[in-house]
Length: 592
Image (cartoon, rainbow, N blue to C red; front, side, top):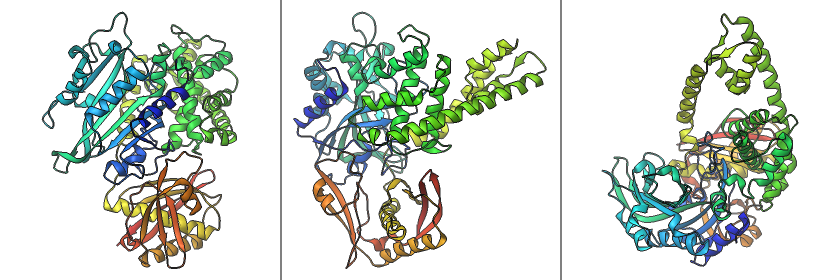
């Protein structure tokens, strides 16, 4: 019987290897080639160029496990299944097999390998609309596997359709697998009694392309992209009602019990708070391991919100001492197979401690603000807007504000507070939708140019600064490139001019950009730049730009790139600034 995440992951990878799939890397949480997201939200991110038609060095059948961060469901975290950080098992077909094999592989793994009874499984397929017809093909395949008609739910586009990520691009129907979580014998399906069924696996069929006119046409290269949650599967196999009762979380939960003096149980009112703390600290540890620091924008803001939310809930369950670093050590212990956690342990613990201290200071300021509120009140009621300001500006949970009000013979307008909170959540969802959804990156001609310019910039920085600087992130759009790198101080005007000059000289030389498929060992021997503490596949794509007498840059990269530097135009640095502690950021553009 499977008891650990490691056993489950190995079983999955081995199963798909037996179906002629090649294992690909579990890549960083910061996507290298997708500016539409702050974090890797799915295993497809490193495969974007290959989904769009580029040849993958390992072939057309791929498999992996990928660590992912998703924040769109943060309000759901604390129930039995939603998580901020999770591991996703995935298998892909890039123009090879399609619906029949994908569905059959999924069903075989669930029922034959994991021994999950088929009577507790239900599925959903796309019901069809004006753009594309009902996915009868998938439904018929499920029926051929003895899934009864009443266990097949036909659902609309918002439930069973993927993409496109933007206005145009690949898209298509998907079919989802669910398992029974209701009481008694399984009955119905995810449409008739949705609350009794929980999603476990999703097979996406990239069958169509949506063009600029909005028309849907069949793709020449049809792809399959699947996702299976490690934590949810483990909960089923261990007979647990919640992902938080699996080995992925239990050591953290037990530590929270010790720190709080409270007991975790299904019926405990503290259970949700304990789950949120465990989830948020785990996600924070993984983000910190990639040298992101808490801040007020983008990834830093997400990280700060997670840490402070964990601290906020810790007060609700009576944790009085410092706790974030204690829980972080448990996370590192659970995920020994992620070497960057142990490698960056000191950094992780230090940043958690500092952020926890900062938030304590915010709470003290909030208390002073509460005293001002008391003195200015003309009635015995604190408005919902004021209570929400205490939450938004100082991190006060509404329960703390209510408690303070009661101690001072006051009350809070809860209905007004909930209205303010609802407005804020809607604004947050609207503003962050473009950053947190999973999607295909911009691979326009201009964005492709910026990918190549990124490598030339990195090479020039190494030359000018005379240091082995490391790339700490990049964000590329069709309008500009943004490059983050390790360096302790601001670059001088002279240094920036020199970097710009070197890049433009290499552009003018009309240098060929060559792509090779090499083994990792061959790539290392050739001096290719890559993050070698991450796991690579058997072969990697290596891009080399050479002058007559020297190698300008040689990088392991998934592309896309131009074939000659002459296509780039003129390179201009428009800004250099601090990104975070010990990390500088350069923004640059290409002009004709």
